[in-house]
Length: 118
Image (tube, rainbow, N blue to C red; front, side, top):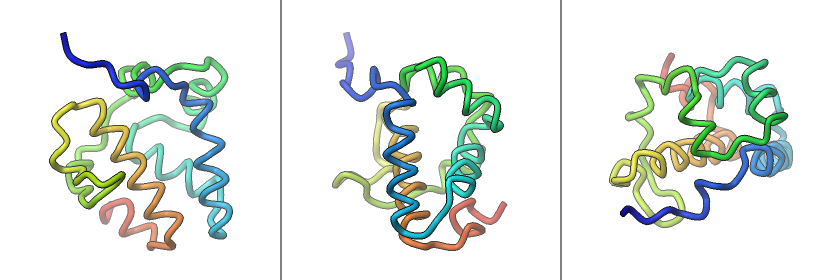
């Protein structure tokens, strides 16, 4: 049986406000954050708000996502000391993609670059 990472059971609702605080500290907006999350997951605003209201865990959040962006594989780099493109567990990789995009937003990267030119 594969090891279950503790993060898989964390609720999206518990992580979202941390993302909001991180990007707002760097003068980016909640709307920009939502745009990045929607780009990655396919959730629209109603879907994101629903996931927060329902308290779904990260595994469910990604399982129920309308669709991972086909350009997500273009997200590369290091997050938490690990190269995201080398993460073998598909769910962990999606979570780290999300973390990486939020980091890029907070660092002031241009939105077109964060959204991989789309």
